[in-house]
Image 1: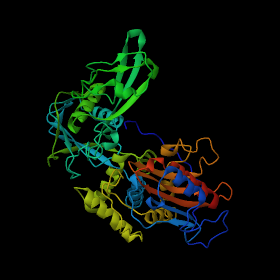
Image 2: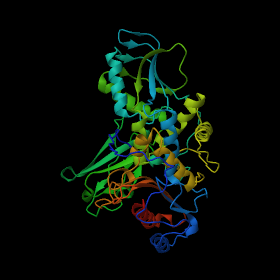
Image 3: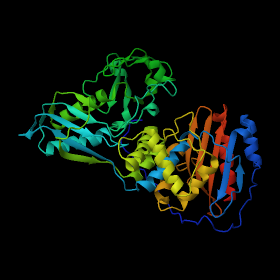
Image 4: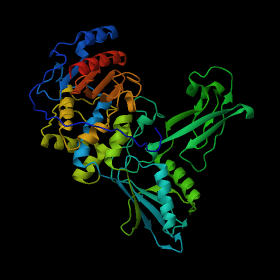
Length: 482
């Protein structure tokens, strides 16, 4: 995914309900350990065994769930795992936490000329975008920088991670969701290609975002008259020369304008080099050096620093749009703030578990490997997710946490679900999906009583992709019983 930060607005008018209140009258009573008929029927229709599922529905004013089915079994949650580090981070770091990316000079800056290197020190910012870097470059010019005679040094020592293999999870090296974390992550490590048919010129216009110095298309696809179909496959894209891709296939005018978000098909330093060279040229800073990785020398002089958006904004991007690499950046930041640099996944998991243990949320079955759920080994139980949701509801960060969840029929990964239906706007829930995994967890509000309940659904089965009917049946039951 490659996009500038969206301003995600989610207004809440929710009064916190103490978790320990006595049960109130319900519109409909669910039975523990017995699935509602509609849920059982949906499972049978999808040919998913009930033993492959975990379900919980618990009104917020009740001390016990109304429905609790197979809730203690640790299961793969897919992207529901993002709920754990984002909730811990809101508490541990605070909603107003910002990442700082300082910029240093390594050498004298006189008469607009830097006789040495310019250095950026990464802090794990999850949302450092090309337009942010343009603003920073403009600030550098305002500070008097006109020419850099040396290189640009990138210090990524805040993280201590092995080389990331984008093919390791599912073999798709171009998928933006496979981009790995980086202490100086720029533009999500991704780029966007835009394709526009130009029949009058007999060609396809191709543009790239962010701007990359030296980028040009070595071969454009041919226009043809067939239906649009699987247009990406028909391009026959070749990225062996990342700054000079070749498209040896076809593109149909019937496709209109299309965009393709891809993981930048080049090393991280080369990607930063292409962006920086283009941005420096735009703002009027001359530079002919290279981007190099290394540690900041002790003689460096601080010039300025970029500050990210606050964590409360960052978690909305993570949970509403299920951004994997952003979640990993936040996860690793837990280790940075708890133990100091360098951060790794083991320390991040230790920091998260330490916080959970200290706040009566110990999860012995939790397997929190990379913090984002893009994993075959991640595990958590429906019971633990439900306890986290209920703790979040009663916490000081409740507004920020719930505002980060997709709103059914309105935005994020639930935008197309319940769109135009009366239930739209009554469900705040995180979704998750992988091969053999489908999941949802969050809050529903009864359209009749106005009361709310937590809902958790985990499905681990080869036919899980067909389980949306089951999850919607569970949500319908929860909406009626809250």
